[in-house]
Image 1 (cartoon, rainbow, N blue to C red):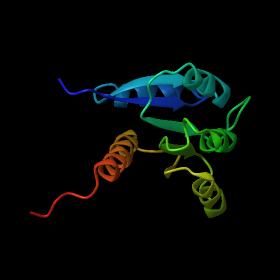
Image 2 (cartoon, rainbow, N blue to C red; image 1 turned 30 degrees about the horizontal axis):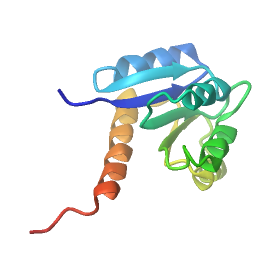
Image 3 (cartoon, rainbow, N blue to C red; image 1 turned 90 degrees about the vertical axis):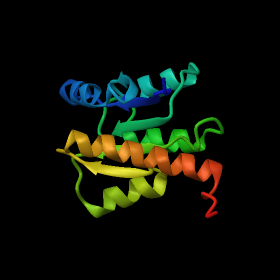
Image 4 (cartoon, rainbow, N blue to C red; image 1 turned 180 degrees about the vertical axis):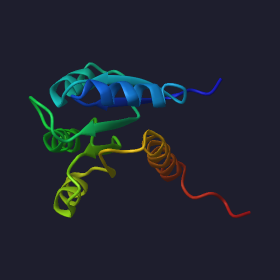
Length: 136
């Protein structure tokens, strides 16, 4: 049986957490946390994670601060991050991508699109680890 990738969902809205867990559970191991502080604490405990899916607006630690902390950490600096947000403006998207997010999804979103974007980012990361396929 193929090992499932571990996805950490950090989102303060319980309905969105539930929708994402339900959508992703067949293809990924899903862990959910309510804010950036809980997410960082869980990561620092050494739990396995392959990608983080995080909201921007959350209590205690918002998504932008979470990105900054992850990118400043020698352990998590290359961890893929996809942001979820109600902010549809270019400035916010650009700011998150410049901070180090790998992708940005605007709410409301199609849960299947989120699933596809997670798979795409993970595939891109895995391809870069093994190098380009041999053309022979």
